[in-house]
Image 1: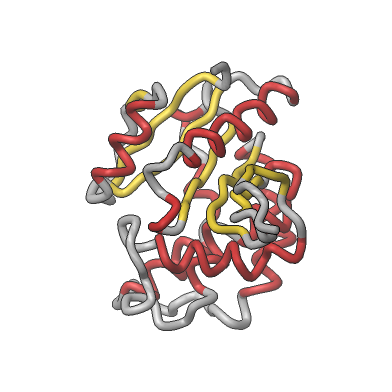
Image 2: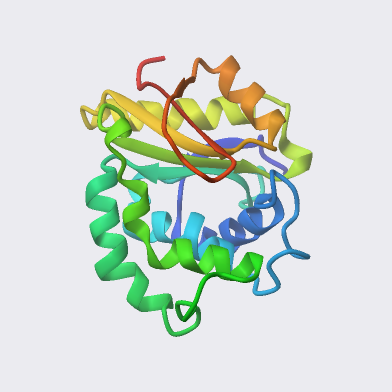
Length: 206
């Protein structure tokens, strides 16, 4: 019998599915496999460390048969997460992705630079938004209300921990994502950044 798709907590056996979701949505919401040939690169920055360091803040959309087809993950405390990323996560992946010796020259090298500089996530403009998140769903599961349900699960977990606000960073080219965040009450946070990104924030209340 096929069960109904539902939001549930992350399980360690979901790790491979999370990585696949990340890869298939990492290029402005689209498949990134032609941009970043090592399929472990993007998950090693934007998905796997969160599930490994803070599994209690990771939730998945289960397709009803046990397979994760979407996720929301993040941290309740960005400053602490950055420290743990530096000391616990980076040593696990640095050999596979050594830091470039010079300025990044390829899209992959640009991402590897981000991997080796987690402190970039700590910005004074984001102090009032101590938590941050990433949310992604496979294309067939988008625009069906599951993204909203994932977001509520994450916000509920933040409130349970006494965290009052959350932020995210999105690529400006992903206009569909921006429309989604706007509908959920996120607002723009003015942050000077040379990259083509926008920072959004909102309270953890529904």
